Image (cartoon, rainbow, N blue to C red; front, side, top):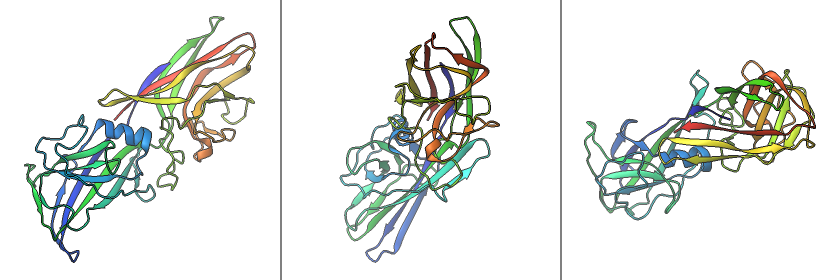
Length: 332
């Protein structure tokens, strides 16, 4: 089954400060959200692979070409980046009231005194101290949005403050519906619910582990009746973990590879909810649903990535096989 779309928007801004040898600010420059670009590949890697809280590294350069979302680097990077700086979730997350949160992460990235000397025209952010993925960047501009430059002397120090804003789901999201037909021509309508981005979905929780991550889901199904609580005795290992792919522009695809339960492997009756994989190494037995929102409990040990809700309860006998697979898209 292939269903709807989740929107995970990203934007950024940055500030530049030049300090004298005593650490006093000599000049400052800030760039608003509309001037900075978060690249498609940067958003994909940060949101769905590396993580939004890990080390980021600032770079500057002398390029003069406007940075666009398909860019893979600064135009002409100057050798040497800052050391890496991490960020944290607690205290930096705001509930948007629409089922999403905005996580605003500020990093102060400092070049050592005298390491950058010259005139520079662009600034950016990477995932590594060399190489890595280009996360965000832009030409340095004045208050009117006109490209300009900054000059750093040998007895001065450049400091980059980079702020990235990530919008992620903090509640279940109805992203699709459809129907399936069994071997006896019985039709079962279903709804498809993506779960929150974080395993611990409470706003500003300190838990930073996220569900939407390549190879971070194990391969079990969680099958529950209408109360969302009672176990049907099935947490079935089906070999169908989630993976993520990127089309190079603004669309990523989350896919749970199709797998088939053999007739003799398992049987169940009156199944309404099926949880599709969960964070690797975690225990799904306690995954109790909030039926009003089709949302699993908030702790890491119950961090399912997506749920199917069958409008008509579905059953499987020992004479039937059961094939399952799912995918949905994410706009970056």
